[in-house]
Image (cartoon, one colour):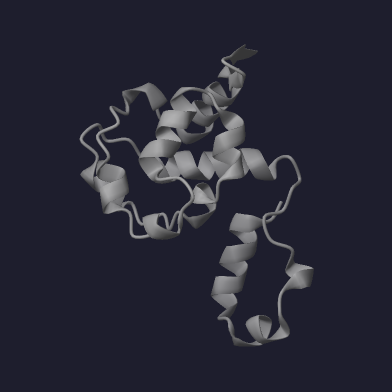
Amino acid sequence: MRIVINGRTVDREFIDRVEEISGQNLSSCMQCGTCTASCPMVEAMQLSPRRVMHLLQMGLRDYVEGANTAWLCASCHTCEARCPRAVDLPKVMEAIRLLTLRKNKDRVDPQRLEPTVIDQAPQVAMVGCFRKLTA
């Protein structure tokens, strides 16, 4: 169900789907910021991991899916190891990626990669990239 509050669309179905796919209870996050302080990729992210959790709790799908945060998550599990509520944030980020890719919208187009990237990148990196970033 989608409702509009102060001009923003709240998508309860999105919250439910992220929780179902990730196996995490989004409301268990208490917004302490430990995940953001622990994240090695936070400087490159448009939204901090704490901010993503906050936006997810509010059901603001467009903000979450529009940011690069879920795509840049290294899945290093540092945030999970340090979270006082044991929220597995990498699973949440994976759920966001999966829900976006299920729209058949690739995050990267393999046809547009520079030939030097294709020639020089390790094969395992290319496979990992395509598995994570393409539908």
